[in-house]
Length: 112
Image 1: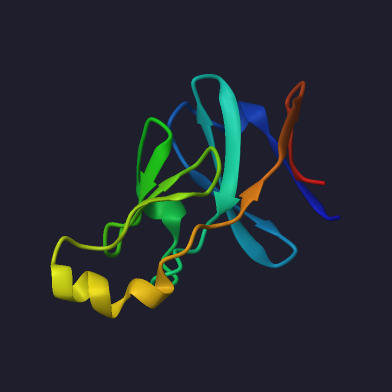
Image 2 (image 1 turned 90 degrees about the vertical axis):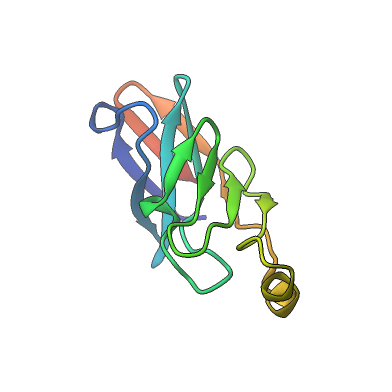
């Protein structure tokens, strides 16, 4: 399985970053001293989650407001608050992939 390596010293607490792993975007963030990695693409319209707002261990999609848990990639809340819009896009409701993360010194290894 492929891996990506980044420098831990390049991260600040609570600031999401995007890295590439086998041609796919992965969001990685440092929260409470621990690194987490999930797929960077929102299943709704493919917006980059790493450009969203990170609060604790949840990231909000910057395009339409879906919320994902960065500890496991699970969908916490679906797009928008309008009931009709939520019903029309329900077939897109999905979790995003979660990736293993290992920190060794100043290296953070995603995947593997």
